[in-house]
Structure formats: structure tokens, C-alpha cells
Length: 299
Ligand code: NAD
Image (cartoon, rainbow, N blue to C red; front, side):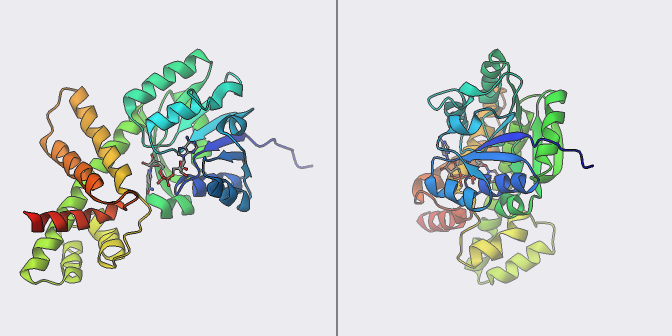
């Protein structure tokens, strides 16, 4: 006789470009997932892929053993869980909250205190890899939290990622996530500057990219983004410029809070912030090329 096991009840809040495929992978892994997004289209897309959609964050989380957030910012995570939307109101003590958004580490620590008072645990588990890896279930996931809570999260995270790292104490996942995006964003700026300088000398940008990729200057932008999203003119990687700018701003704020003067980090943050202000809302992060190109002409 096959032993009957009851699937863990998971609430998944934030069914955007990343959250939707991540939640779908949890459904495919056999979890009982109720999703919520303030966008009705996102909820409908989740239901169409076999998930259960709720009408509110609170309804989605009602009775959940694990509540996952994949939302744009820390402010929205807090408002959703313990603020206006009060998603955790009907969640029983003992449940685990996993914030997979790229959030502000100090806000994560504050949220954990509020949750602790309600008998709930928190781990931070942000991701890297973009929409393609979210769909394939091959994200890199960096976990911060108490060992027992991280162990409890691990099987769930394995349905969404294939490299799960225990980064350290609570907030550590959010710290390494924004540091990673700082390194990625600084590399992207360097890559697009090199393309533009080479182009103005008369080089072909495809050739520049091929040579960089065979040489020591290659990075994730040169290898995976320049031809596909920049030179093609598609600018549709699925990761907003504003979200990248937010992450570098969090990294710069973290350095400041630690009393560190990191000059390239500050400068990188300023550039991405200025690009967000200059380019239209919803611009893709690969449009940093357009911003640098325009700026290089203005002088
Ligand atoms: P997105 O904008 O595509 O999705 C965010 C979703 O949250 C949207 O569907 C929106 O309707 C929903 N939402 C906003 N406020 C809400 C609320 N109060 N209640 C319920 N739903 C609400 O963003 P994304 O690209 O999926 O990014 C989500 C998080 O993951 C961000 O923190 C981002 O920095 C991070 N991230 C994104 C990528 C990427 O490649 N897109 C990669 C790694 C990490």
C-alpha cells in the first residue's frame, strides 16, 4: 500500500515575472500552493497553470505552513505580511515565512522581530538567474536564517533552484544578493562603455563582444546579455532597470551603514539611479546601454 502524505500548504505572494514560474514549479513538485498577486492577470495566469489563486494576500496565507513572498521591495513585503494587507493574520504560530524578494537586510531583521512576536520564523532566500532559470527551476538561492529554519525551507527551495547556499545568519541572503547585483551592474556598465568606445572607433560591436568573450574582460553581461538583449535591440531580459537600481542602492546603503566609503559602489549606484530617472518607467535593465550611449553624446 502506498503511504498517503499530505502536501505542505504554501502561500505564494507576488506572481510576477519571477514569482509566477517559481510558484508553478512548486505546484509541479506536488506542493499545495495558493497564490496571490494584486494583478488579476497574474492570478489568472497562475490558475491556468494549475495553481489555486486567492482574492487577497490574507486569504492566500490562511492556514499556510509556509508563506513565500516574491515582491518588488521590502516596503511592499512588510505591508503585505504585517501592514495594511495583514496576510499573516490567520497564520498559525510555527509557520515559516520565506522572503525570496531582493530586500533591504535591515528591514529583514526588523520584520523577523515582528514575526517572532507572533510565533513565526523568517528566512531570507533571494535568488539569482533571471526569468529563464526561474522557469527551468535552476535558480541560485542564497539563504539567511537560523539553521533549523533554513533546513525546513530547503526542500521547498529545491523545487525552484538547483544551487542552494546557506549564506549565514538572518539577512545574509539579502546582503549577498545585493552585493552580487552590484558586481553584476558594475560589470554591465564597463561592458556597455567598452562597446560604445569601440564602436565610435569604428569597430563592429558583435566583433567587440566576441573578442571580450574570448578574453579576460568577459562577464555575465558580455556573455549572456549583449548580443541577445542589447545589440538585437530587444531589451527584454525580464529584469527591470528600476529593480537593479534598487538593489545597488541597498548595497550602497549597507556599505554606508557599516561606515565604509566604497567609491565605485557609490558611483555605480548614482549612475543606475540616474538611468532610472532618465529612461521610461518599466525600462529593462539592459537599457543601461541606451542611457550610457545618450550620456556619452551629451558629454
Ligand atoms: P515583477 O515586477 O515582474 O513582479 C512583482 C509582482 O509583485 C507583480 O506581479 C506585482 O503585481 C506584484 N505586487 C506588487 N505589489 C503587490 C502587493 N502589495 N500584493 C501582491 N502583489 C503585489 O518583479 P520580478 O522581476 O518578478 O521581481 C520580484 C523580486 O525578485 C524583486 O525583488 C526583484 O528585485 C527580484 N529579482 C528579479 C529578477 C529578474 O530577473 N526579474 C531576478 C532576481 C531577483
